[in-house]
Length: 400
Image (cartoon, rainbow, N blue to C red; front, side, top):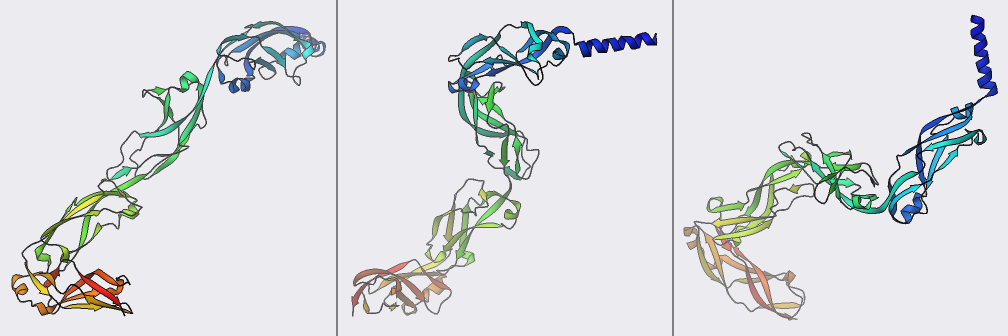
């Protein structure tokens, strides 16, 4: 029995390996490759169906050649370079053996299925669409999300015209997951139609599969607005009130930039120029590292001076300083009425001789003629009463 088995094996090896008898059989799942698609694209056309078809060939030939047939050694191609219009097509296909793997002369195709390849040619569209972002959860209380930035900020999409023309934008969705720091990473996207519906994206190609997405996360802080009151005109803290609207604004920024920020200074108010009540408007300015989340760009500051008496004195004590070389000034204005303010008893005790009007000609126009010059009024020997308001005089300047 053993000898019989050995002889049978030897005989089989001889027949198969040496004699290599003829055989036949199917070769299945051969993919179809379309050639000439560049010519289609140059005409604004593309294939949208038929690309996933497979071919089954019935082949006869030498046994070893048949055993070498597979999707890697058999090529099925359809030439579409001559197509010029969209439509439904059926074409014959070309079968090729890879010469390095198969002996062409040892094989013959006895049947094939299907006999022809069916496919659809449609018009192709190419568009550029924007990338947008949305979040699916809220940031931690006390923090704020900034504006999305994307790289690329737009996508070039191509595909069947009827599908591409439905796309409005590409949407990136980010789950903040109680994040307190800026997010940056590569994320997928979905196509959104002009009606707001999500599209499945089948049959559409884009020039980027992922989008580098950055979303800044900032800390929030409520900061008080302040003004610097410069006392003058007899004012003290007791007779001045100051109201700022709004009192505070919400600011966002990096924790390191927010930590030292205790208040926001709007500017200075010279109380010597405030008569009774006055409302001033100040811009709210921040450093570039911070953002005004409240959106209020101006603050109204109402300053009131109460409980002080005023008096008006006629002053003729006018002096010139910093007179330009070669020029002589002469007073056209001989006297000015000067208003002073303070406690009633202190105001009543001020005399005209204590007031001086000083005209600084350093900034005067170096030319002859009549000029209006701003002046500063000094009240000598008193700290409990001050001068209120701005003053100027008219001066005639002649050349020596």
